[in-house]
Length: 149
Length: 147
Image (tube, helix red, strand yellow):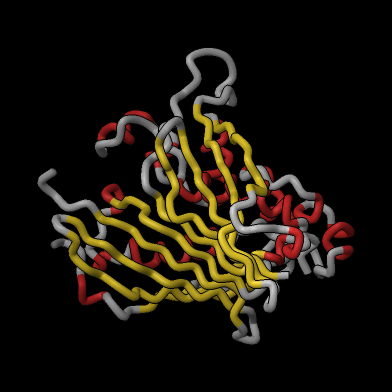
């Protein structure tokens, strides 16, 4: 198995926080069919009790995938990105992300195991605010297809 | 916080049933918005070289477009505390044969039903099936919501 199982337990963090903008929220909402006005209009969001426009449910994947990329592109991970298939995804949400958030992210490599000719990898990315309070946890499994198929 | 009153719901109730069209333009828009520029989502040549039948939608695009109408029904994006799925089959999104590349070439059919309700703590579980044609493209899709 070319995928390095010794990376189980390793962690990778974003080099600097992800700064959430209104524009990024609006662009993601437009691309994903999220039409509600609280994604675009600050007044609509504050009317619901949020301090600024609210990100769609899966917006945290932007931040998680930036953080996961540090692991996947690490030469020591042994992962050939062209052989990666997404297996599953889970968002555990403490609070919605809003514009103006400055978010840190750390990806933990929770599991690297062989599944036949393939490798199955589970990562858990903890997205936190500047006070280190949890915002969203993103758990992802990927399958790295083995050679010889 | 949710505007939906779970006490009016019963297990098995269908709360959202809709179809979502995808085009090659949808994939390019999602690549830009999400930062996921994997060429299997826009290059036919690359996709077939790595063993796919053609360009496929980002699994995360399917996951995003499925939850959007459910959030709209809930009335508050803060109602969702957990959202999970498995990607069980790829969604092929061919280039449109003519006209604009925004012409839909794939359709997701989603049905969201109430799977569980805990009235005492004010939570509910919504189970979602997502098909493209006859095939389940997402599986074990669950959304946990709270009031």
